[in-house]
Length: 416
Image 1 (cartoon, helix red, strand yellow):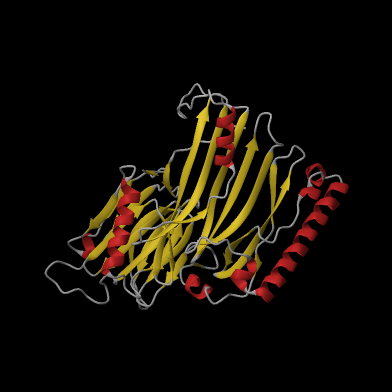
Image 2 (cartoon, rainbow, N blue to C red):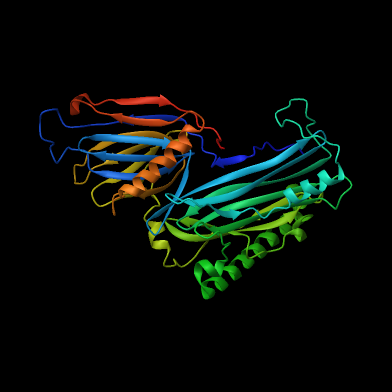
């Protein structure tokens, strides 16, 4: 196995944004804005592709900021989610680990959401057994690509729904002369407020949890029966898969939250192993569940697609936010739409796909303390790699409105 890249630093969520399009339309100077054509007042956070966009619009124009930051809203409070990486490199050993954190904007303390990994424990044991080995620069191009001791884990953030974050944790332990190799993977849901790992019952209540777990077990049984049947019929791929089926054991705690048409669903990941001991996973189809009370706030952040999938939108009281996917499906043209039968559109940005969520900041309005905390978070996240982005464009006349384009590349950034 190859070495894993790591940095001993707090790492903001890996967001990578492509082309950014910003435009503003305003009334003619010296004239009162026409209510029918003036840009509606709106303020929201829009998460798409690998960035979050902070949009503020009024009759005076539009302001936009973007940053590689992951935010979620719980009971009116914004939380930032980020990762910290640690590890060490030696001539023939590699150690790399990640921890997952959340912090309420405006607060000083971060909550560790996940970091229960044996990587650092194994690193300390290896150092004790090899006291003469010196740590080396992880960027050294002379490093062996396949060290005999490789201990690493990886956290992948999959989605966030209000207070609950879904992520996968992958662990690989290959220790020369040590215990048997371990290759494991699981899915988790964690509360960003407390760091508590959630069960299905915590999210849905006991009765609904019992039903969905039983449905998932039946789904797994149907899936494995189908694979066995295909294997007996001569399907070579299915025949190869049959050899590993007995290693897949249903684990009701290995699941994530997803959404189907803005309604909640639970997606179980069933861990298994290959014939060589490598970690495998069966991802069961999402199962629709009865919406718990906390879902109503989440539903408002989720998009609605038109029947022909040509447009995704969020409807607010005085305005609508909509996006049209590009022909290739890798970008979205974001627009702000006024109210009324003949509502006009204002271009906001071209962003990477897919669209995740929209967090409204205007109902109730963001207070001064919240605005300052959000601005600081954007400043830190966007400036860590020297790519702070601010935009404020005003057109002197409605008919002369233009759009501006700036190419921006966001990379996985460090916070020291």
